Amino acid sequence: MQQNKMSLNKDLVLIGGGHSHAIVLKMWGMKQIPGVRVTLITPTLDTPYSGMLPGHIAGLYSHDECHIDLQKLAKFAQAQLYLDRAVGLDLKNHKVICANGSAVDFDVLSIDIGSTPATISVSGATEYAIAAKPVPQLLEHWYQLLENFSKNQQKSLSIAIVGGGAGGVELALSMQSHLQQILAQNKQPIHNIKINLFQRHDVLLPNYHQSVQRQFQRILTNRGINLYLGESVCQIAPQKNINQTLETFDIKCESGLVVECHKIFWVTQASAPQWLKSTGLGTDEADFILVNDTLQSQTHPEVFAAGDIATMVNHPRPKAGVFAVRQGKPLFENLQRVLLGKSLKPYRPQQQYLSLIGTGDQRAIATKGIFTSPPHPLVWCWKDRIDRRFMEQFDKGLEALRLK
Image (cartoon, rainbow, N blue to C red):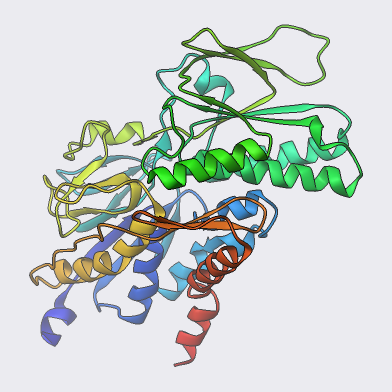
């Protein structure tokens, strides 16, 4: 086997710096294969950890605390870092096409690029709404909003979140908490802020147990967040009043409801990037890459996929960060095995999983199956400890491994 390792002359290319690939890079740095060149293609030098992102929006974590340093990880894995965005694949010739026009050769390819909210079908959403993903653009808009709000705290601000899943609910609570903190510090009335949450289903968090749905509806109502359940947004239109200091939009729903807002954040059902459609990879009806139990593409065994961008044919699961994290180790192992010509190992994700959902005020709810806890500071401390431990492996953990 040592002879086979030494004779390898192969290229492993990773597209995207998602949770699964972050774990792959860390494990690759600990156990490299001689003769395999690793390249990471990513448009950013860091990647957000989804578990801590709502806490960052709420002002509880700094940017560095909730972002994984991909440059440091790539260096640890002795991988080439290619700062660009993939926009296509030439699967016949095994090339990744990048936005700058260059092509990167691969023998084995892995894709972990997450997802984007679906906005195409709603008039005005692409032009006027701020998508929750990609996260760097979301944060850029949020930082600008915070800066403008801090300078004009006397003026009312109305924010809309479209999408009542876990992401939309956490975003609404986190944004409200941070903005109210700013007002409280300056002794301004908190009624200057209006948060409006639109959900096309009749319930919040439709993928969760009824106990979770009831808890969060109660929390949002008690916090004064305006809930519009069973309302499908069909149009976003800018108002044409030139005397307004803030750009204002009308959110129009299929029911005829119209709500006026200044900022709109879009956190709807996930969709895949458009460029995947033309690659020839087998995809589901939402254009996510279909993978088998080994995380290989159904149609192209030299291509792997993990995280939100992948749909496991035999084990479909919600698009949640917990699954991307759990896929990291089996993805690493199967990438190494395919490069070495070994048989691959199947991976079966768990049926039930623990969710710790923050409420933006240093409290959180724990839920698994039919069990749901009330929001409590101890649950937040538990979540905080888990999240910080996860992030430590890419910072202090790498330093410790280098010293071994």
